[in-house]
Image 1 (cartoon, rainbow, N blue to C red):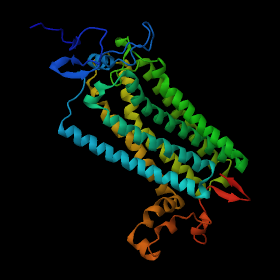
Image 2: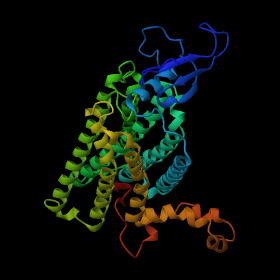
Image 3: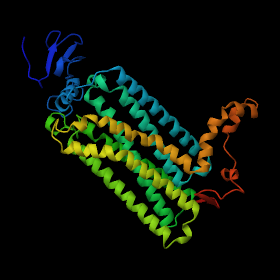
Image 4: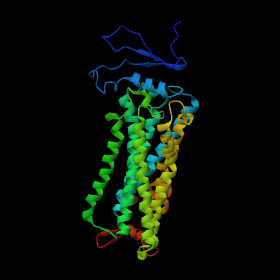
Length: 396
């Protein structure tokens, strides 16, 4: 029997050579004797094109075979149980952030710059949960059945949602700095600017996450490939982590300046509600850094380690799973820190309870009607939380 080198990948054709009248079936034989069914490389693109391998499923196996100890882990019962748990966790992420988005959309009190940016962060967290579900369902042995273009889409969505979260945090920090340090008043004519800023966050995120599929990858250059993300170039991973780190450092610097302004020259701004809102967004930033810092460190280690030299890189999925918890915690922070938002978020859940149906004569939909005045819930007990409303303008 002919012996192949350990790292060699052999294609065994089960039908006649090219051209073929029908779609053939190929077998991939890799390390350890593993065999995967696949389709032959697509040859629709011109030779020499940088995108000619995008529809070639052999490339995904080749890159995983080069960078990892095993091309794909077996689909064991324990792995299936872990995948089911992750999917349930992501469903909770989607539900939580959907409730936050619904609360921000329904109550006019939350139609201010601060809450619109928090809603944008909730939208990115919601999409992150959906992207992680797709990533989980297409991981393991199913990874080797993907073409490079599908692999880029699978991983690119995760990078896009991460980018949107980082830029949303930057937008929130800028808004807080303008509102507190500059004592800026936002009127109704400023809403277009806020929407444009939110749109810019997503456009930049799409551009940043789409760079690999546009050509910044390591197809045809195995020595330049990342171990954690075998089709991404190490230079791209280093660039993304550097950009995110610089943005987070800028956000921290903005919050330090805000605290200095509030505590010194603008003592009149250091009211309990202003400080409470400032503490909320600071907690959101701190939780983001705590959740994502281990993953960023692993990615930085990946850019400097030779192939198969750092075993910890093969456990990177644990760090990314921990990072996903950030999307689960953010809605908890919003509702825990804001009494108004907490009531608005929990109101739909209370409407379908047995007590609500009894109180409303079996018509739970009535309690979903928006409040006539969001501050009326708290009138006479405490002042409304920032932002407040004065003469049709939102002062934040």
